[in-house]
Image (cartoon, rainbow, N blue to C red; front, side, top):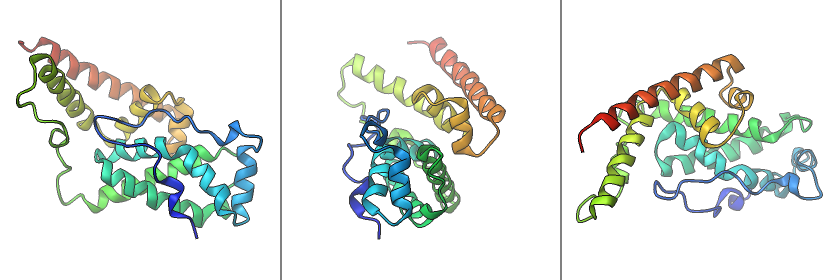
Length: 210
């Protein structure tokens, strides 16, 4: 059975300390990613754990892009890790593990969204620090962050994930397309429309009186 530590304890993930682009990479060792994947396919839980740990941080980021809730994102990554372990025999080790695993994460996040569709998503500003008694400069930054996050939250789910992965994490259009299971042209369209919507929202913000 998959060991529970494989996606635990990477780093704190909060709105004030969002995940950074992954630094651990199984391909940096003498054993290649395909080697770990091949071992995992034969039932080696430690090899699978190495693969998942390498992409756990960005997996949380992808899940959060859909859910806008860190606790739910953490749960989704745990669920996706178990789902990936249960499906690892079907993985082709000649291909990259990252898009395969992140696609499982994205699907798990979408499932979670469907389960909670009956209620509104948690307003992001409730997770942000109170503006009470903050210096003017700090209060201004909090307000700015609230409005930027509100603009991101207002994007359609797939556009939000696409622009976060492409602009925020540096993934290619092809990688975004693989995770979202859409043609590359569609991924490009998601990024384009998300950028345009964000520019419009930020332009409105700049025009507001101080």
